[in-house]
Length: 121
Image (tube, rainbow, N blue to C red; front, side):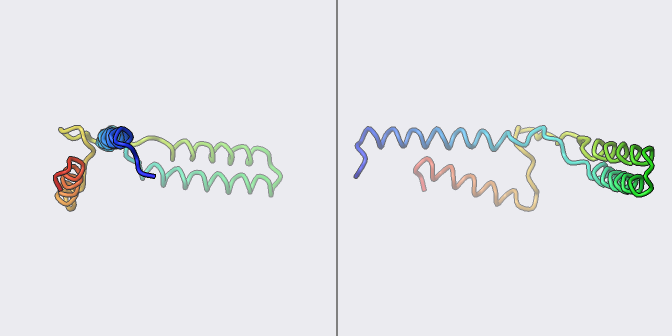
């Protein structure tokens, strides 16, 4: 069943609003997000694995203090690994930084998409 003219206009307006809001969300979603701190993640995993080994050793030796120390080391490793990194640098245009190798391709595709939305393509 075809749509009436009123329904078609409403649908077109909803699509334009959706595309406009989608462009706003994608251009600002990665600004200010912290980058992962890989050194902290690796160090935290190593500490957590050492703590797991200490916990297992404490159970095998039936020594509560070694088990508690192993658990504390595991907890500390998780805290170290989950430490946030430095915030991502914000570009002057307020959009997320793009890789230099493919930025011109991305810009061309965005331009073609915008032209398609405006009915010029």
